[in-house]
Each structure stands twice: as structure tokens, then as C-alpha cells.
Image (cartoon, rainbow, N blue to C red; front, side):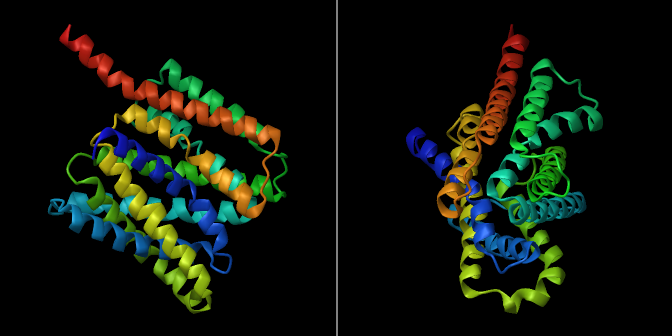
Length: 295
């Protein structure tokens, strides 16, 4: 894979990730539990196929790995379920932008859990995301669907930030695709008891959307992301994946006529700008530290 194809793969991966909420809403007869169960099950198949085609080396699992994968799978299950509840309650745009706030949660949690000092640019990220969320919220009424959807989306972002920190604490030994496959397997097993009673009632067309969600928005998107990072710099990837909410909102606008307000667009632009800026600064920091240490 050269630089050009890697960049194209990143954009395709960002598009697939952005379609997550769209496919979840299209599966109208399926509950969030069924959607997440199906997504994880199809993702396991897609990731397993990718690993076999790419001939990736698998590492043996130790007890510590199993505990981390189990925790990661439970957090991932909670993140996905709350996200799809947000989609069904508040719509794709609200759910996508609310979840996009997760880097702000990560900054705060890193300071609390890892005793890391919050830098100036990270404090700016939290401020910009907070302002963006205020603009995104149509009305501050807990009884309204939009506010309820946003709260579920924020909870989804919080769980995802905890998942990121859990993966950070255990990163380095297991290949990314192997870890993702095992975590998706845990997700499917966790949701099976809740999903099983309603599986037979899901419409065939909804199973198609769930399959596309698991294969394209999870398995293929993750595989493209991992493959592209072997060629593309992390800061470039951060800019490309900053387009994920844009893709999701644009498709929802066309498919569901979910026309965002000017305030929502302004808030979304602010959140995306904050995420891209923070990711670029974070990617540049190791390079600066390396230069300083070699000087």
C-alpha cells in the first residue's frame, strides 16, 4: 500500500465509521441490543477473514490479556448500546456529534486516572468541545428527545474514552486486529441474552443493515485504519477521521431529511475543529520530545 492508496483507505474507513448511525437507524425494527449483537457478530467474521488474508501473527493470550479484553468488550458493548439509543432517540446528527466529544472526556480522565497534568492545548480542547455541545443542543429540556439523545451520546463518548484508556494501559503486546476481534466476540456474548428473545422478529431487510454495519462500519473500517497507519502518519489520520461526523450528518440529511440547524452546524464545526487540532498536536508532541532528547 502506497501513500495515495493509504489515504484513500483512510477516507473510506472514515466514511464507513460515519455511516454507523445511519445503518443503526435504518434497522428500525431492531432494538439497540440486537443491533449491537449483530454488529459484533458480523465484525468478528470480517476481522477473522482480514486476519487470515493478511496472515497476521497471533499472540497467545495470558490471564492479564483476557481480563483486559473482557473489560474492553464490556465497555465497547455499553458504548455501542448507548450510542444506538442516542440515534433512535435524538437522531443521527445529535448522536454523532455528542459521541464526538469523547476526546474531552479522555483528557479529563487521563488527568484523574493517570495523574497527568492537563496541558494548555488540552484545556482548550475541553473548552471548545463544551461550547460546541452547547450550540449543538437545540433546547435544554430533559424531557425533549433531542436533549435525551445528546445525554445518551455523551454517555457513549464517556464509555468510549474509558475503553481508549483501558486499551492504552494494555497496548503494545496484542496486534490491533486481534484485540478488536476478541473484544467484538465479548460484545456479542454479552448482548446475546438480551438480544436472543427478539432475534426472530427482526425484519430481513434490517438484518441486511446490521450485517453492513458489522462488516463495513466495524470489520472493514477497522482493518483499513490499521493497514493505512502503516503508511500514513498519525496526525494525517486524525485529520481524515475528523471528517467522520461530517460524513454521517451529510448522509443522514439525504436519507432521513435530518436537516441540521445553523447552530448545530456551528457547534459541530467547533467540535470537529477541536478534535482535529488536538489530535495533530498530540501526534506532533512525540516528535518534539524526540528532537529535544537528541539535542
